[in-house]
Image 1 (tube, rainbow, N blue to C red):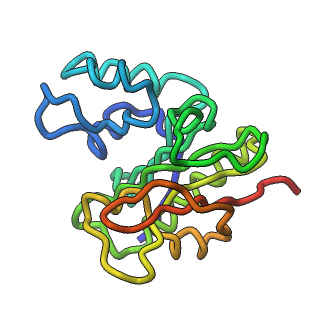
Image 2: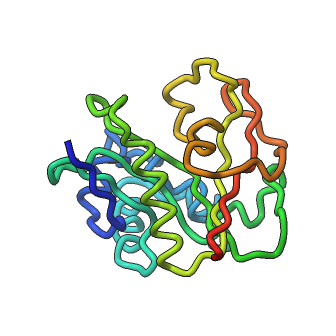
Length: 191
């Protein structure tokens, strides 16, 4: 199995990976951290899909997609932190004034898990941020210390996943997810 990670410019593939099961829904499409909360709460159904289609046409793309033999199997949301709600998030600290990128969601389709796709997505997100000139990239995973994380909350990743990709803990956060504290992990992309 060969995994290729590319910028998320194909709306249909993004919809396959993070689109809601119910078309009239006001959830997912991985928008909750990408756009302001007021806009996120009012977007429903086709308007929500249209907003994601618009994001897929922008540069930089709203994330990256992992493909296995041409089939979309995974998603990672990655974007400049300044253009996300993390820029204003009181629970996730700012480490410094670098114009860092945030990597906040990793999703692997059922039937494709336990095949290294999450690792490929993190590597692909790092490469995407680096290509766009990001000086550093951050993630905000749970520090679960090896304990099981509920699949619906596993989208943030684990500290171990990011450590394997070369990230180091830069700060504690005030955020807790699924009973586990979230930590700010960072990878310097300069040099």
